[in-house]
Length: 170
Image (cartoon, rainbow, N blue to C red; front, side):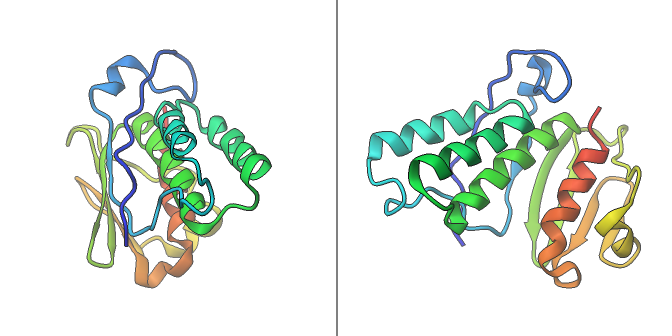
């Protein structure tokens, strides 16, 4: 499993869904079990690929990810899995910054979400939809972290991760 390029996000605006300057200093580290990159076969021109990576690193709003999906599809055709994964990771990074998460890491079959500080624990608010099925079995809420069991969640772990982060966004 390849890791995604190191994406750093630069925030300039203030408002809902924007990474604020204070949050830039504490951008979350993201390490997920996903092959995330722009394949050379999909975007053959190196300068174009680098430009796209640069633009992805500057995404500040979740809505911008949807715009990038449309642009990729319009310019290069249907998204290959690694590009879809890359766009998902960018979205997760924006949500994690807003939710004041310090890191999302993979430990064995677990996805571990840690808050920036122990005195601001993560919570599960409005646990509906897919997530409600898995609370207390595949989703463990601790004092200093939340763990998702990818074996029990199967292909739903990405949806559950997104719901947890969204429910913690200020």
